[in-house]
Image (tube, rainbow over all chains, first blue to last red; front, side, top):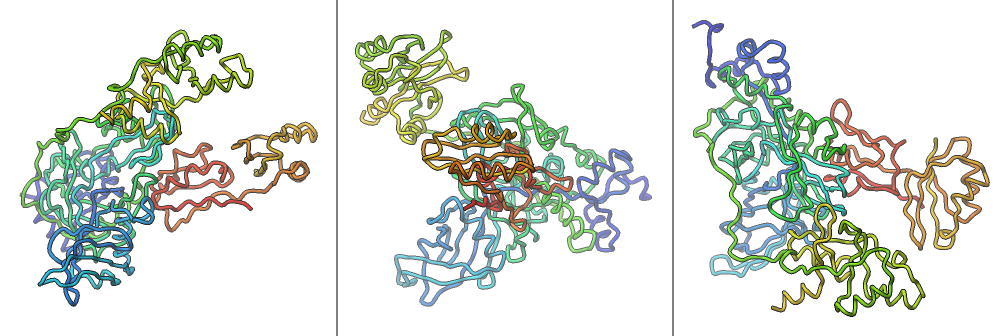
Length: 501
Length: 132
């Protein structure tokens, strides 16, 4: 069959072309343009490989290192690298550095991700270890400095990487929150998203036709392999993930960056790229996917529950435009993962293949297409605000202080919630405010009420409401719904009663 | 337009000195940011080039400390162009360039009176420069 009539090609054929320097390689971005301008058939004839890329915070990343044996030998029980505690997963001298393990001295600034970056950069890190001592491993304490050259093995081993797409995060509450989706300002003043959209690896082969066990990939500036589906892999709803491994000694700090999220913790930014062999026209169509066709949910991260409120769906085209519209409000949105670096990953992988430094592998087994991400089984219940809240004693803003003082006595409460005619929250008055009004001769409620009220949501865990009371040094929170209608009140007394039960 | 940073101590903070400076000197002043409590505070003002000297000396006479703020500093070696900072900026001083790099507009930035972006950078590439 002549090359022009061929409807399929094999990875073997593509590798032959790569070795001869004849392979036609395009980045995912270039491929989309070609398909748009010249059509599927032409693109299939002209293109052998499409390179994809992403560069983002991947918290389930880590590294396995083998230290070799000390003299006398030690069976490490606990170990620290630059004061970051690392796990000891197996025999005597293996350690696992989890990206989110935090430094004991600066927990939100420095962690496992930074240690991996230091080692990849060739820097020395300080190892401290303790052990209980055995007859075969007598040593009980260790202190030494190591670099990557001193290690027998240094593997990047990431059990959930390369999310196919991710949520867009927003905050509908009245307070700034700090999350793994970064800093979210109150009242939807910003939004964040992650993922490279149309150039993201798993979006360009959503049926896992060429991406599978054993696929060779770009990982952290070096080469790696897909060693299975990632944890929480959920391909049916386009939330696929990968488990990957690679030799970190050959990786580059340009594509592996330790990161710090204020009041959340540390992570590792990973550059990951996958070559997609264009074996048939179906793969041409798949790699032609555009940001306008990839959707994700805008999620309210202020909801302190597993099921957070979905506010709307948006496309990656809207997200990359810099602003989205939520509830008729224009919200500026920015990316947490670097689109510039994602493009660089795809470009670097293209260069490698074009220059015969990287050939393709056929998967030895396909990844599952039907797994789902189940919620946790919980055998012990926890308390929510709704379980302890009581009905609030209320007043209107035009009432006299004397009447309110009487209500405090007859109802024997310390807090009166000020509402308007629709039952919506206006303020709060405490027995202390009333006492002070008496002492200072104030008559009007508006002079003494607190208008900037810290509130609670009925669905939030009692623990978070309780923490908020402690943080603001107050003893009660009016419970309100999304329209600020007062549903009740939760007090520190109610919380203590529950704990004492 | 020039931006100036006015610092008020606990004594002058109770006086309406911004209004006084405006009225006495008949100048136009835009308040870009203000953080004030009973112990003092900071105000970032934008003023016309020609009025800078007049306004600075008027504030100083009234007991305020005035500086022309150097604002934020970005360590370009640490910036990986993720863009976490972009949507946070209240004055849209941070933008994504055509090549997807992150650009900081020092003219627009209101600096230490805001600082919203500083702790949001995953690579700690943004530093706020405090004035003496």
